[in-house]
Amino acid sequence: MTLKPETALLHTAHGDVQNFEAVQPGTFRASSVFFPSMQAWRERDWTAKSGYIYGPHGTPTTFALEAKVAQLEGADHCLVCPSGLNAIALVYITLLRPGDELLVPINVYTANRTFVTQELMGWGINVSIYDPTDLNSLTFTDRTRLVWVEAPCSMTFEYPDLPALVELAHRHGALVALDNAWGAGIAFSPFDFDVDISVHALTKYASGSADVVMGAITTKDKSLYDALKLCYMRLGLNVSGPDAESVLKGLATLTLRYHAHDQSARTLAAHLRNSAKVARVMHPALEDSVGHQFWSRDCRAAAGIFSVVFDGRFSEADIDRFVDSLRLFRIGFSWGGPVSLAVSYGKSVATLQELEGELVRFSVGLEATSDLIADIDQALARL
Ligand SMILES: *Cc1c(COP(=O)(O)O)cnc(C)c1O
Image (cartoon, rainbow, N blue to C red; front, side):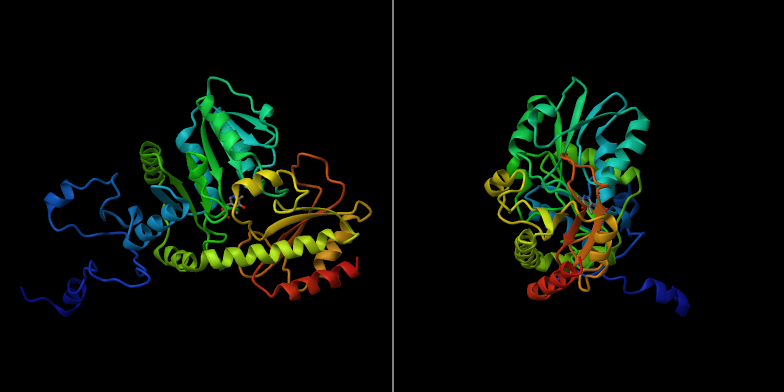
């Protein structure tokens, strides 16, 4: 058959990359994936994720990313999701049915709480709130299906007794899902603590560039993985090849960056604690932080994020001015990127104890620590 040039252009050199090996697997993007024959098409197993069937179900780029995130977390299976929040929602949607009971910590990540109250409760899922620092506050029924855990809590950084929480939940026949945005697979290995599912916000430290939004779910349990994977496929979720490639590049330097963020944040946290204008610094590596003993028992590192409660004599307007006068700390959501961030949440955050003053959360980037200290000092001086 002699082909016209425009046809030949579409039917030559599709390539087969099986023997290509390099530091990065390359950016594959596809909707259609070719099958060699009808028989191969008939024999495909779209649920297996063992081969290439349809772009959204996996390309060499997303398979490589899932394998690396599973390895990072010490899990056997991983699904990369369009966002960290989406990964949280997928766990809920997969596991919970009307009449089931879910336990969530009182100070859970705000967007998680909104999904729970606005969607899950509307679907007839019963939600019970617990205090992560008090094991007696968890109430179980014979319908308790899932306990959600954060280590530490999102805004106030209380570090829970994770092994005791997991043991308690398992004793009552409930599964445990951990939001591992903070630990990022570096501070501790979630499956050492027997959690059933870990949710990773790749948006944060794994990406590291503040330009990709992505999440991941990891587990060691094949049947949980299968249930999550089928729900993922039915919902039509997928991540783009270029975004997956960005996160793969981020993973190559994750450990170095995480420890750099950690060291700088600890220095800044200690510096701020010495200020007479500050009432409290919430950072699990500080001895007077709630749950510090569990953090030092269970963790190898801490993230670059902490909160400060200012002295009660300062008003919301005073603290807004403090944040506005920071030069290097920019005002913005998310964290884990190279540029430092600070936001005043005032007294609006859900906490275990009432706040004596305005709360400011700092996310420490990769600037020189001495420059960040100088920036904080000049802003404190104006307060
Ligand atoms: C940011 C964050 C998430 C969600 O990640 P996104 O990718 O931004 O949706 C989940 N949990 C915690 C604790 C977070 O800080």
